[in-house]
Amino acid sequence: TDEIAALTAGIIALDKSVAEATEQRKAENVEYKALMANNGVAKELILFAKNRMNKFYNPKLYTAPPKQELSDEAPSFVQLQKAAPPPPPETAAAYMKKSEESGGCIAMMDLLVKDLEKEMTVAEAEEKNAQEDYETTMSDSATKRAADSKSLTDREAAKAEMQSALEASVGEKKSTTKELMATDQYIAALHAECDWLIQYYDVRKQARSDETDSLEKAKAVLSGADYSLLQRGSSSRLRKFLHRH
Image (cartoon, rainbow, N blue to C red; front, side, top):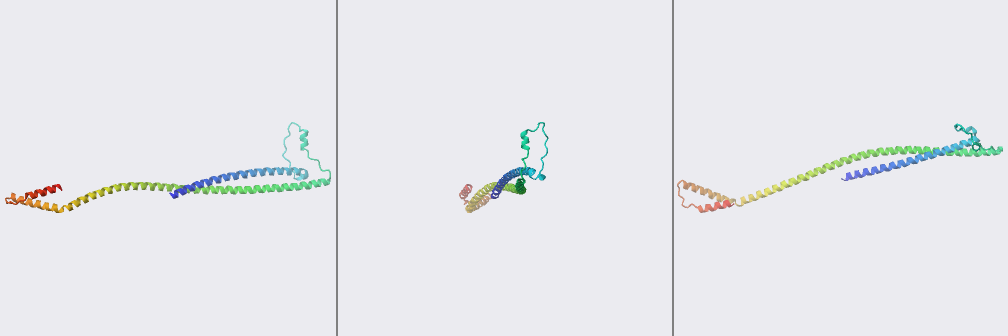
């Protein structure tokens, strides 16, 4: 019974642990996907800004966007103004200063991109390891649960069999007890009869002897002998005593 209770509690605890691990894995996966999405957007924005800066300060590194088909309507003046690049610096000194500033900004953008890529690489590796650990845990838990469930089923079957055997033994004991009581009663009655026979053995023996003697005398009378002193009264009393007992 204690083993069955322990196995049952163990299975319940295992199921709870599996459910908690599953919820945790889902939450980690959601967090991982959000991180990858956010970092991906941030990386694209930084690379877009870097490419725009290269267009003006380092045209050789500029990557033009794919061409779009022109609509039938001519662009408005406002659209042209928005698409127009800013005016170039007025002096060489100002141009050099802007180039240096842009170089520092681009370097910072590259550093940010590297940090984002590194964080995404680490997150991807951690996600992969976490998923592998989760799958291993689920496999081990399933194996253990199957083994515990089989053991629990076997023990419950053994318990049921023992209970059935116990009930059969109890029934057999009751039947045997009744037979024993009947035997005891028979022995008691037989013992009482034996006691009576032993108690009146001498009397019965004397009565039988007297009866035999009387029969011999009666036989002699019938044969012609004269027995005037035949004690009929005594024999009659003995017969009545024997009939009463």
